[in-house]
Image 1 (spheres, rainbow, N blue to C red):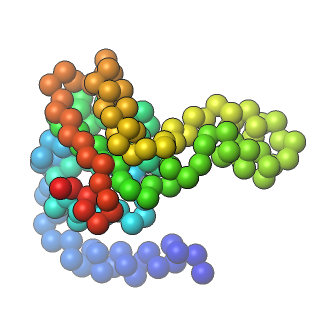
Image 2 (cartoon, rainbow, N blue to C red; image 1 turned 30 degrees about the horizontal axis):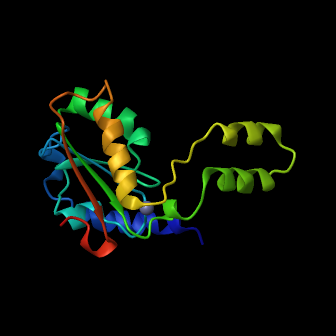
Length: 166
Ligand SMILES: [Zn+2]
């Protein structure tokens, strides 16, 4: 059985408890955008005390700012967010490999496929070795972004999984 087979039942329960959330505004109430890892163990809303309507949450492997830029521009220019909170975490999968290693894995699973090889060679997976340094690097990268609004407040934290915000 695929995991998605459980969606209809779960959605029924969700809809039954939906309440007045349809009256929430499109722009996030807290004018906040969070960038964090896609790690399945992280629940950004629960761990940061956020509710539906409060913030945009952009997730990707590692919570890497460069991957989030497109969403940040949409969020700031069209939906009014002015604060970015960037969270990385301990035990991140991005600490476990290098871009050349992952490229080799992908290529070895499609031997002789030049299209696959060329496509994966164009991807920098932005892995990192030290969480704190990765956060610092991302903030510097964000601050140097000409597309970021000048008044943007950037909050950072590298956190353990059990103590995401501190
Ligand atoms: Zn992670």
